[in-house]
Image (cartoon, rainbow, N blue to C red; front, side, top):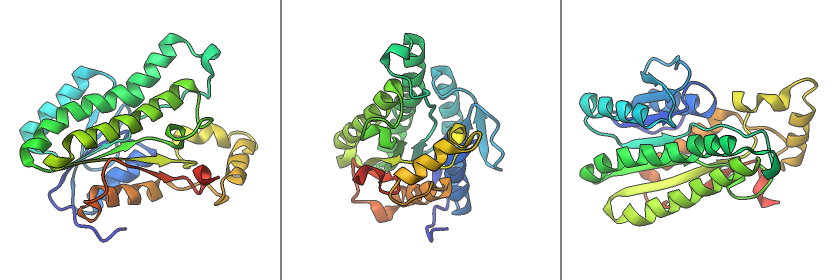
Length: 242
């Protein structure tokens, strides 16, 4: 656990029922934060939680109405919710699938930012940690829709920071590689051949645990990283260094 005090900081984490989002919410809570956890599935942590689809504007509106009423501020947003696309190339990707991936991975982050930003600007301070992927930096980390969505998250994050850095806002994103989460369990199916191949292709020769990404998140959200702006931080065991 990082020696960081987030006492009374209000933190929103999307995708918090499992994987990276769960570990982020848990670690912020353990470090004193008031956590709001959002997911399609039930969040098992003992924190304020909402069950719903982050790609739906009405749901996002409801979450932020509650945040304004109960907490009256928001300090940190972790836009972590996301879905994979089965590595589908263009010819195997329907328009419906394309729109679903972009709505979940990108537009949901935009909608959350639109709601959180006015509150942060009024406070004069706030931090966004958006979830990208190595698929936002290089090809072959997903299919066409997933790769496009994660490249767009990086671009959106950079522009967000440039536009509002002078008003106390910081926006950065994380680009995970092979992380052992429920979202990636298909790679471990059967004899685990795919998971073994991924580990072999990763210079560090292993998959990371979601808690490792959570630790990085806390650093990027903390005052210790106050001069880190508009960047993407890979946590990929050396994958993108190849």
